[in-house]
Length: 331
Length: 290
Image 1 (cartoon, each protein chain N blue to C red):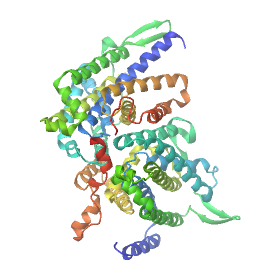
Image 2 (cartoon, rainbow over the protein chains, first blue to last red; image 1 turned 180 degrees about the vertical axis):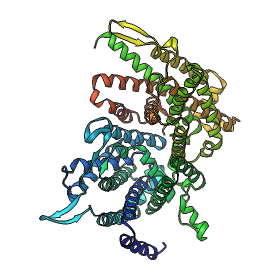
Image 3 (cartoon, rainbow over the protein chains, first blue to last red; image 1 turned 90 degrees about the horizontal axis):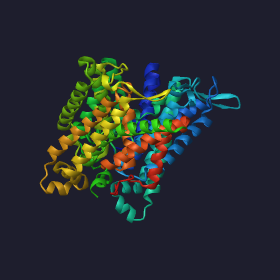
Image 4 (cartoon, chains in turn purple, blue; image 1 turned 180 degrees about the horizontal axis):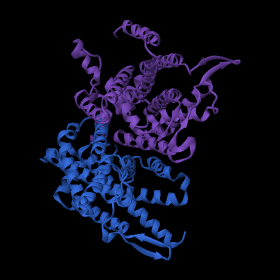
């Protein structure tokens, strides 16, 4: 525990940010926070649950599509109605995909989640739902109205930023409570030694499925706000390249903490922005950087902290992260 | 559906399944022997198709394109194994997934620099470019038949090598129990390198033979990667015979799905995969608890 000092300073900085920088940066940080929520959601499955999922973009995109489909033409949708609907849809998709995929282990799980994620991609790409491969517009940002009064209008970038910040903090709180609860310990036990956890009587399948569904629902939360921010949804939102990119964020941030993936998301998004601005071949550079990070820093950039600050890190390196997966081949 | 149409669709299904088998067998071999999940497999399929287009345009010969394309892919495979992949052995799958994702980004961008991002078509060899007249208004392209024949030969070769040769014995033993095989004195660093290169070459070969009947476009590797994964999940990881079964099942499902249920054809193979997962989570021919 580093105490309360750093989180409080960060929170004050986050609250002060919209008053200190131009609108463009407020929107940019909102986008980074949304990706941070997605990365933290994914890490519940990957880091805490040992389930390497390649279909979280599908939950993310599905929730975005729910907002697009529920938005009434050119009028704003009601946040209090559409957000739960979007998260529920993502959770339902996660329940079905998870129930099937969790019948498998390790590398099978990766392939099966990838395939089912692509199924959702093709569902929106090939059929006429919401514009097919062209995508669909979310013409007006959602709002909260009460008795005809508009309490909250996401059309203002600052209001949008604060709503995203609120959900970011809520996500951190929920995930932290979940990870530290008996449920979270059981999930970690199943990840570290499945056989032992099973023989202790934990219902592994159900625990993993619940974690997967919660993770999918939070990914849906991120997708809802991503769709609201861009005002547009396209099948690419569901594609596995996004899932893999978010996995990179998770790895950069470190697998063992709740907020690590948020840092990973910020790092990767800033990196992409810098690369895009400086070269046409930014994907080439990004690919090489990913390869170097994967080979050199299996514990994420947090591995660098002890080297820089000279203190011992609490994090375990990631190559110890998934013994269940490694066991799969030899056992 | 009359008998001739049925026959034509059946041929299409088999031909599609055979190409799938070429690509997926490379994937399943690499996983079975190296224990590495390679997401960049589809990228090499795409690269094979672009190499076929580029070399065929340069030399005017599809055959030169085929031989040179496979050779280039093989060498690239040897180099990649030496530089990157061998660092992944025994690492957890997350690291393998992300490293191969990084490779995809690099390969995609390299393709854009070398060949651009245009959609291309490749002409089949002249003597295979005709069609066989089946009825008055129905004909079947010779090249598609040639693909069936060619893939059958390659598949037979793969099976012969795996079941009848010493190399095949090492490969089978390695897939079964790598530690034990290593203890028995098999040098896996050499075996790994060549298996990976062969896997990459098979992916590229799939891209090369498909180039004349499909278009060559940047995103073609992604679709093939997913299909290969479904094939491997259906058949069982590491099993080449399983890959053959899975590939033919997908060929049949996809082709006849498009005929009978055109509106939902794109998700039929996933329904098939879900069914197999419920029935046999380790794949139809998978034996080990994974």
